[in-house]
Length: 148
Image (tube, rainbow, N blue to C red; front, top):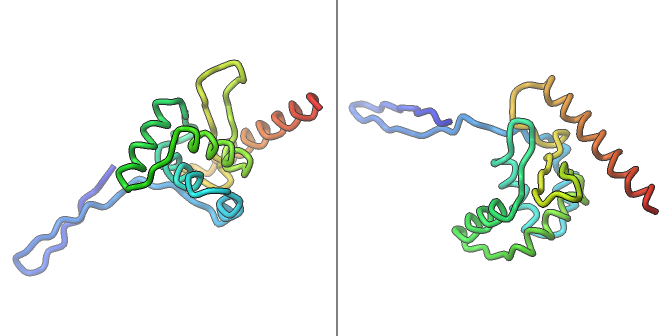
């Protein structure tokens, strides 16, 4: 959503498009960002924050990864799908996001960590999302521990 600001100086009017959508980035985000291993991970994180739903969720299937790569190419950056998949693993390891998909499914659904990034004004929903994120982390940790 964009709004237009009109600045009138004398007889001249200048229109300026002002972005009205936003994502909150909390100071704790640096804990995640500084743990990332490559530039591609950071670029993907920024792209996902812009694309995620109001519940901090995003699907990263082959089509969405291709869309991300196409946007990067417009800026002169060239990465492969394998680089993006590696960046996804990096973001999961840094706890910037968690996988919401079952291992048997092909679709890759993720939740961006609401402790660091949040897309709406509602703090009540954010608190619920943080609890869900923590529960998912614990569940994944329990799965890993039961395998070992």
